[in-house]
Image 1 (cartoon, helix red, strand yellow):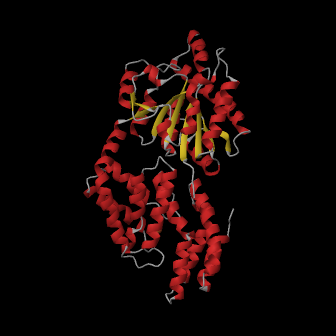
Image 2 (cartoon, protein in one colour):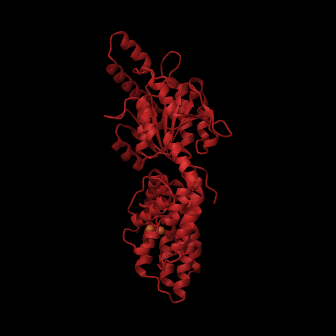
Length: 452
Ligand SMILES: [Fe+2]
Ligand SMILES: [Fe+2]
């Protein structure tokens, strides 16, 4: 099954300046271009958050400053201009985006509430939080655990700051700390920030998501956002990200050993539901989902999937946390430091059906694990076992078929839903060949209910 490259969660911040024309008023043409791009990005992104800057704010601020307004008052004007521009973009989006949150989320709690039911959420000035719209976007991206933050400006960062070519293709990069040094030497005034403000840069210093600065003239490049290398953008790379990259490079040769160690441990499973086949299928599905969501770290996905059930060696209760602890110990002995270990722990510790992992790799592993309830292979093996006299416990059959029926609500990723649909129809084809009555009844239930 071919699945298109996707993003799970992204924040796009569009500066105020690109949205105004020479007369310093909001430009319909520019808003239309933005809306078209948002529609395109939404077509390959599960959750998209839009932050709009204070369009025309600098004009109002200049005017107010001329009358003696303070910097604090000028910041307030900037915030109001942001809200105004956000309302106009919201109206423009309404007819083109079907799952748009109808308001503007003004707090982190409202972002969470909106994300539960809507795929596109506009984020406004966050109360009691950051003041610039760049820092609002950086904070929102951190809060929703986005894979990527895009900051669209009226200018090219390469024209204002020395950038380095990273690899083949148009993508270039700049060291975040160098940008901070440049900004630190300048006085920051409301509505006048030469590159990005310090609050935004400080947030970027601590986060794991990737940040791209794009010129409004290159807005079309966002159609390639799921395949990073072809982006016409400048990536801001922090020291933390460079350290993590170096750590993963160092760990690289040891990862196959870690995977094989989990394989060996899992071979000892004698649980009919969570046998080697379950973990093997879960790892294959996780790797497939990881290849779709290209910002997921492949090593975390693969190693995490192989280790996710290892804690079952000491029983099922709270095995999720135990698996994560065991993997953390292995990683620490392999020389991994805490900043990397925590990613593997997050990917493994929350895969229970009633839990909600916060990281992309955690969602991939949990979805892959739950999708095994509708894997035709599982039902064929159970059927063969039942026909050979091995009893498949009825309570377990019921539990798995129940999970399978609830999968529409349990899965986090859009591509996992597409896999679910394909597997359910495949399972329906397998059902007639199942010979054990109980297995066949449960498989029918797993295949049929709540199919969309
Ligand atoms: Fe598990
Ligand atoms: Fe599992």
